Length: 547
Image (cartoon, rainbow, N blue to C red; front, top):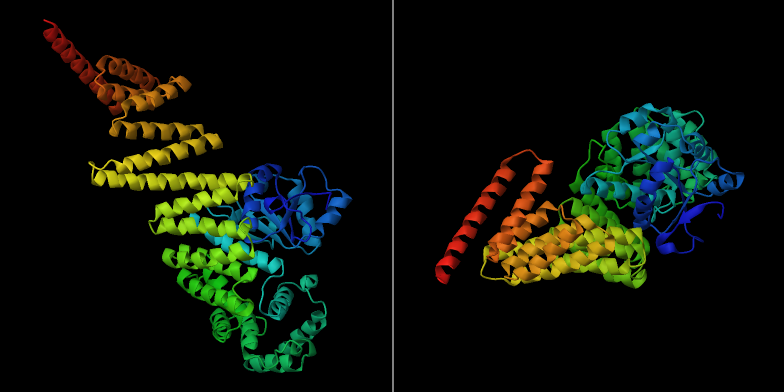
């Protein structure tokens, strides 16, 4: 694979890792590659391959290397749709010719109708990256299932149903289905016979025909399916959904698959969880999806044991769905049980363990325990200390955790202004957040935090310290309106009305350069007039005392 560049979790060696290709518009690569890699590595240890120059034609060696991919990821943006580039003209046809699944991920609003109208993207699996936390969570759940499918990880059941239905659905859609996608080629001849067999029977005999076939088929019987009513229900239900044996009937199909799931067939349970989670399905229901996701996670734990990586991943997926469903308490319970298992089995630096730590922080925050949420966020940053972009994302979340706890302390202060301890706790948090902003190079947020810290210092009576902060900010940017107004307020608290007058007049000049005279400027001028009145009173008082 030396002909391609690659990314792996934590920069580990790529040998032995499942291979995923990344193609796209050159500009989208700059925007999306790091984010998509982070999403993939949260779900599965894998290696993402791409070309450094996404404009140059592929070499023969690169084409040969791409043939080894299990899946291809294509970000679809307005830029890609409006242009002609190598990703669409060369890469996409190549992956299709190789029989490799291409997953198109929309990274902009309103793109689905354009994708459906564009023949270049016909037949691709399309996911919406989402613009809200809930939508992004759903995207990641669907991505997880697609990864498990593409990388051969639908555990606990033989692949017969997926392969059989894939063949039959493709045969119904096209006279020349992509049979090479069936992993066990020995099934192909029997599947072709199966199609002929069921077409000879009327609808009333569809179940009996299927049962007879499974009983006499050597390849299916070898899998123990001849006397497996649940497996028969599942296959027949999927057939009803797409009209393989008879006219399609969605209600009948889902009913049969549900019967199979109730009988404990894990593949049916997995399918139902995905169905009710699908935002495009008319049956979509988060509560029902959660029910079946619980059943599936429990099935994997029983089949493999709670220490198996597959069981850990599915329990983690269950916790995320609990959060989407508003069951943060249940999510926290699952994650608290899962964290020591993942730590022991996978290690603290494993992407799954790190992701669990992040979800623990989210769960604690949703339950109002922002102190615990902050502790988990700090733990996550420590675990990601050498991970570049992943660390930055975690640090951004840590800043949000600082802010949430700061707000909690401020509400405590407002409830009892005689108790200054919440303000002292906020001061410590402000100091940590400012240092983190400096590390991130986030100057605007650093300035905002220092301004808020100065406000709190004034409430604590530490006006000299607050003044030092404002003076330092104004040295950096003499035109900063907020810092100038805050400095005027500090001088007023200190009784230095002349200095306050000068600072307030300066603030009015700065404000008026960018705004027409409005309510803010009027209020500033009224404050300036009040400062000058105070200054005159102070002068009169001092004169009287001297006389």
